[in-house]
Image 1 (cartoon, rainbow, N blue to C red):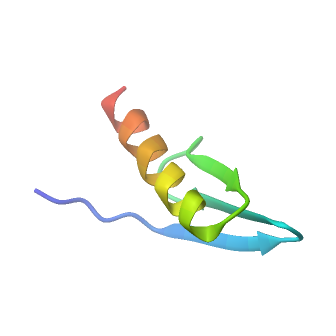
Image 2 (cartoon, rainbow, N blue to C red):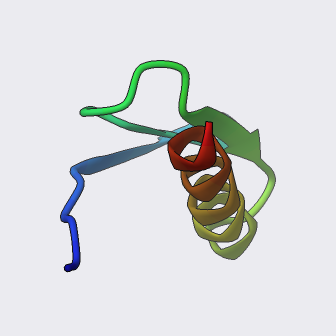
Length: 50
């Protein structure tokens, strides 16, 4: 079974910020878009494992 989540991504100055709307506490900040999406994926997996 595959769940779907809503990812919000914004560029603020030199930083990319993003979060998963359905999972409180899953938010990240990185210098590049690619780094942000990778970090969000890892952080979401860790949150769901808890």
